[in-house]
Image (cartoon, rainbow, N blue to C red):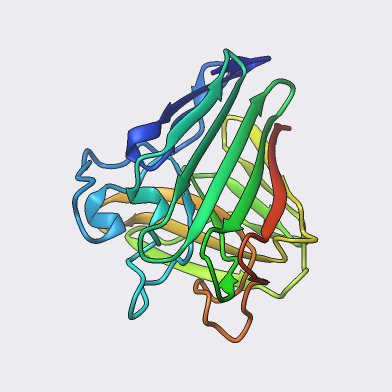
Length: 242
C-alpha cells in the first residue's frame, strides 16, 4: 500500500501482520533477528517483528495462547486498493471477529471492529495494538508528559499508564524522524509501553500498546467491555509524521 509519504507491506497469511511501515523510504518497524516460525507456540519464538493486532489477550491464560490468536491466524482480504485495505479474521478458542480497515494518505489510519460471533454469552472485547518500532540509540519516547531517552543494553521492560491517562505517544529517532501515534481513548482507555534493547535474543524495539482493557489480559482487574452475542466495539488508531 502507498499514500503520501507512506509505504506499507502486509502479510495476510501471517496474522495480518504489517511487516513494513516506511515514511519517505525509511523503515519505522523493527524487522526482528531473522526468526520467522509461525508455527511456534510462543510469540517471541515465532518471530517478533512488524505490527500485529493482539486479540483476545496479550498474556497467555489457561485457555488463550501467548499474545492471543489474531497474530497466528490467516486473515481474509475483504477489499484492497493502492491506498486502502480491509481485512478480517476470527478466533477458534474464543468467538471473536476482528475487522481492520487500513487507509494511507496524510496519515496511516486503522479503523477496527471487534464483534462477538458467539450464539450466546458475553465475550470480553479485548484488543491491544502491537506496533514494534525500531529501537535506536539516542531516540526519545514521549508519552503522558514523560520523556524516555535511553534504556540499558541487554534489558527489556514494560510499564502501564493509568486508565485514560493519554490518547497519544511520540517516538523520535536520533536522525530527527519522528511519528505520533494517536488512538480513540474513549474505547482504548489503557496503554502500555514495551522497550527491548538487545534482550530476548537481541531484539531492539519499542511498542506503543493502546488497549481496550488493562493488565495485558481480559480477566485482569481492569477488564475490557463485555460484548453480548452480535455486539460490536469500534475504534481507531492513527500514525502521523512529526
